[in-house]
Length: 493
Image (cartoon, one colour):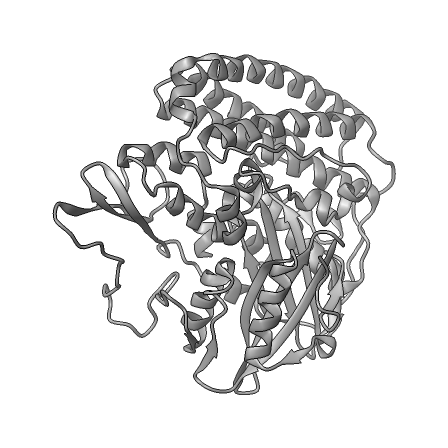
């Protein structure tokens, strides 16, 4: 289960000199990637960076068994590089993204269309997969939807109500966040990181700060990282409760839908009382946190947490006790374990398909190096499994928040970070509520960001939603979509 010894290795939240990252030929890098994934490693980032008139591709692998990250690279001087996608499907979007951003072809990629925007292509001209045959028809949904949700286009190839294939086209939310971070860190950098996916503000801000702290060799104080962990779990609580309510609404079970809509607000208000923002904005800062918590505030948070958790327990109990709900949840939108592993799924969606992976345990940073949250697993890979994993995580995250509020370490909450070291590569993995967030930064000779890469879990998980609809009824789509509840802006950046 170990990577080839030539890979540069370090812990999540660490860094290495860019000169120590091995340089292979493009073919060797693809072979190293396939070999490493076969041995149990995962591709968590694969991206390009401009280098002296050419392009250097960086590959970051996660070795969960050793709690290490492993990095390799190749320099592309021509117009193409060999695709590893036919042998390693989990990098298919990474390779399409590289081709789109740098104008190089991934030779051998089975579907090399743009990921977010077409660049030099004619406006509005984008190929979609088509199924030909008698009585086969297309159904297009979006990008403008009936609900108050983000834009995305879903194109179904159907025979009657039966779905042969779903293709998902995103990119409408592309804002250029990675480009905006280049040249930093500056006063806006933390705000760009927080808004990579607005409902994961604490998660992305934590990942950004851990990368910056690795490059500045700054160790945040224990109290600061404890508060970060509390905020991260409160973010998980609010979103999981909201998701269970939305799932209830999609199957017409209104008691839980109504209760959880209100309870999501209660958990968001806990974060607001902690830092002044329901989304956790301006809480996490390089070197620690911006705010502290006194004993009185900790007591109020504990009291409100217990009250909200008790109400949630009642609302979710109604949901899982209803036969009509179980009839719709069970065996709907199944993603088998083998497919989840091949696609590189993250977070609750992966754990619902039996993949035992969680960055809080496998690549711990901050408070999770010392205090652990048990991993919640299921194995059926259907809507019920994804809902059940969320409920287990609600209970375990609430227990973690309770324990940490009752035993906050003393001392300051923040240490001033120093200047960033030049010509280094830093990377970190943070378990957000949707799954593993990966941030990677390269610094230049002046210690500024020469390249910044963000990988939201939705970047991997949208492919699983498309798979879950194969062979299903098109009427199952809203329920399956909500059971994943992926981020459009987190994918589009």
